[in-house]
Image (cartoon, rainbow, N blue to C red):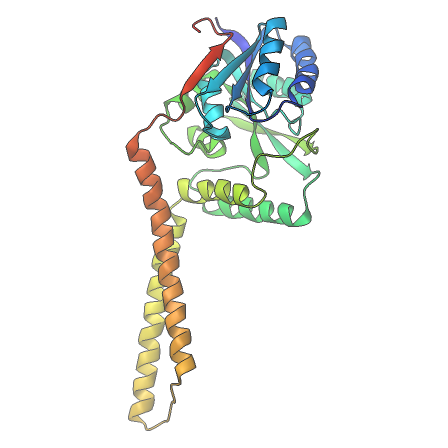
Length: 313
């Protein structure tokens, strides 16, 4: 059955947020939409997250559950939800209420105006340290400069997408699930809604504070640009050119009788510098090769264990 809106909510160890999230979002959807569904996509959790979702499903059949066979991570959970959604438009939102459900009616208005993608763009980021905000700003700035597709700054997964965008996303075969880059790749008419991001209602983020952000940033840097490969190549040419000029200068000085002592520290510094450049270049190459390896294996992006509330369970 075709609905007006599907809401995809990836969850993992969120037992304390489920009920409050539904208390806020359901009245908002009831007030602005004819029909909708809320699809929770669960990475298997050791807490009561699944039990609480199922209890709400008994009370409201519009609340549905997809449970993955193992923990595939938030990006794959989102893609699983998109693949089983049936709405003419689909909203992806986090359950921790840092993505305010109150923005959804505004997104729907923009969608009905003809936009295929309406993404929420953060003006402020409450509850984050200055260092984290600076790292995020620098990362987005770098990605926006080098990426082959325009990836909006200060955005997360919170966005509305039309049915044709979702269908195109379902056709993509990328295994990393970097939704921001995938949506940018698909294209179509896009716009933003600005908001001030609040702190989490309860619990802690499941992302590693530092490595999680770095991992996401690497998907943007490597998955959507050859910039790092080009930097490695140009750096190699620059060092080779510098070495040639330095050797030529030494030769001229030698022929003219100028003394130029080369001590052990100079040799050690040069060897370490060149060795470091080589390791960095090999590491960059390895990142690209690793992603090629993941793609050619063609493993399923996710595997479903249970589907509750769907017509073809």
